[in-house]
Image (tube, rainbow, N blue to C red):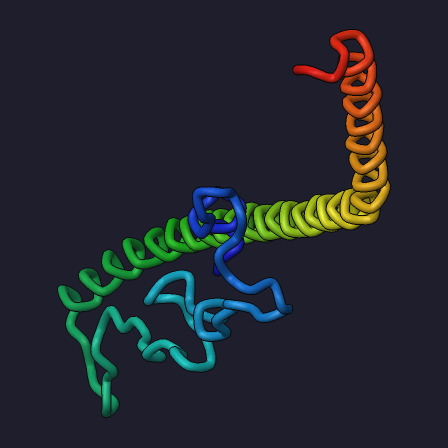
Length: 170
């Protein structure tokens, strides 16, 4: 049973007792714990495609360029240089966003760990109280038997007084 189900009542009977055995078993699925946060994320199991960018084809052999080609390449170089500068800024921002996401993720997991620790502490306190209450049962049983005996003694005495006053007839 997952922690969320236990915490938010999903696996409880009408009496409020957990329906699963509390014998130390678990429902922690390693594949879920280690699952990617997104299908496109890079991991050893999904290393990406190692693609690259090539704005112009490779010139395979030495060659001459004319003025028009050189001017167009110079203009394209300016565009690509500015695009590279803007891409660098964008990738830097994306990296900062990823770092912020990681911080939020880590802090949320710390919070969930604290919730789980505190839930265990609460359940330990509940179990301690249950044990304490069970240890008190014999005392309450003695008190109850004492009250029953006192009631019986009082009825016996009352019946004796009634018999004496009424001359033995009810």
